[in-house]
Image 1 (tube, rainbow, N blue to C red):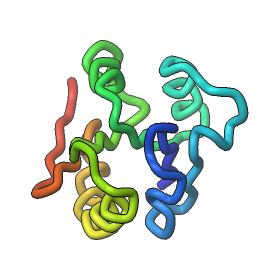
Image 2: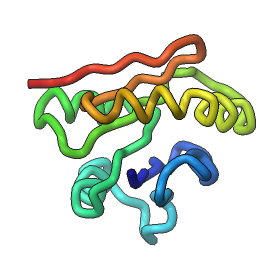
Image 3: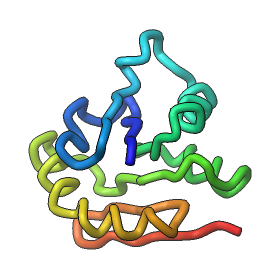
Image 4: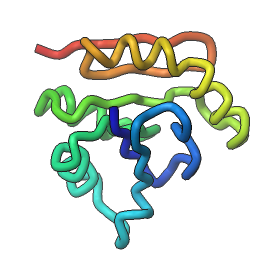
Length: 114
């Protein structure tokens, strides 16, 4: 699995979890949400974000890309990275069949859109 991390999340998020991890800032210029969405499709990546807009895009357009939506509120970078790493086995399991995986501080949930 390949991850594309939105620019509002730490650069190291997902490191050691996925086959490849690309942060939005590595793509050069600041991308709009539409450009980031298209880049995730083009690169066959799961998009990792805190942005509600990508949930709304899934509702309108469906998948791909699949989305991991971080819904923890504000956490210190190190705490967020630790939470993501500890939840990774469940995220990986759920993203196989779901379009959206939501990561909260106390749970991980998934949704599939028709």
